[in-house]
Image (cartoon, rainbow, N blue to C red; front, side):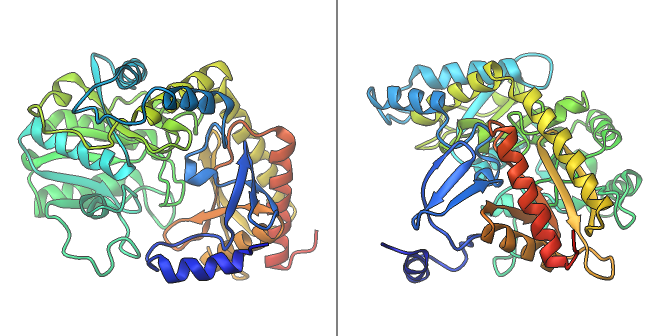
Length: 427
């Protein structure tokens, strides 16, 4: 029997060390919210491929749609020979767009492509060049996306200089004095010291930060950004790559605030495990570029489009938005109990099934090392779990929304036990 250790040796020889992997195991097969490694060990999956599997591993409807598409064709390049699934998916996404008025959708392959093309469209539509993003935000690893990402290590380290005219304001986490007022004051300071508002094409923000620590953007901030954009002719981009498609209990996280963006970048759970991303935007913005100005060889893959249409069916037919809200409420209740039990848990937050919390060291400080240790211990106990945040201090939960209550409770019990073991708390 092959072992994880043997595969790890092969990986180290063949794959650049810059490609990090959170666990030392190798997948063999998976089903819904469970995964088995090549050694036959079974794990509950609370990572969901980093928010890609809201509908679970190998959702029956998604697999059937992909198999049906495979019997017809796998690729033509939409720019060479078009096909109906691309149009059908664009129509579905346009109808779901979290803003009023007509919409159009561009389909791509990766989240980075989505955020970069959103900026590209914003620049074309406004005739401006600058972009404002937020500290702690994550918008991808390609060069412009890395520039917009609000964290140096590991995303910008050693690869500068970054593309010009990308500016950052602090994100109001509610921690260490980070408030909405401070964020807005920082943008005013940018307008005074660095870039006039008439040169800003777009402000890009995650309604719930992903890699930044699952911090929810306060409604007053988003309302103020909308007003600021309207005042100065700036476009508002909602980056829903991680927070979209029922993860927060809505199709898009920004819907919780009723603030309307101009452009929305999407990816991850859009296609249930198949590579697909997109930009949904107001028609006038989406039509700002001439034919040939948008696209990509694999953009809007027919396989991905078939999968995405099935994902949207599953969200609707299985009530996954309501399911996400119920999962999140239940998890928050359990985590609140852990605090009562004396576990070093703090800053519980999130929307719907997108839940995060921080772990503290013996002196009450948030600790990335404690969080990493809890993830390692959880893996040993049969649960795949991820951390995030500026120092890796946040445990984030991204369990498939199709998981059973029993399986979710098993996973939550493993986390509780892992925190107790790492922190030395007797339960």
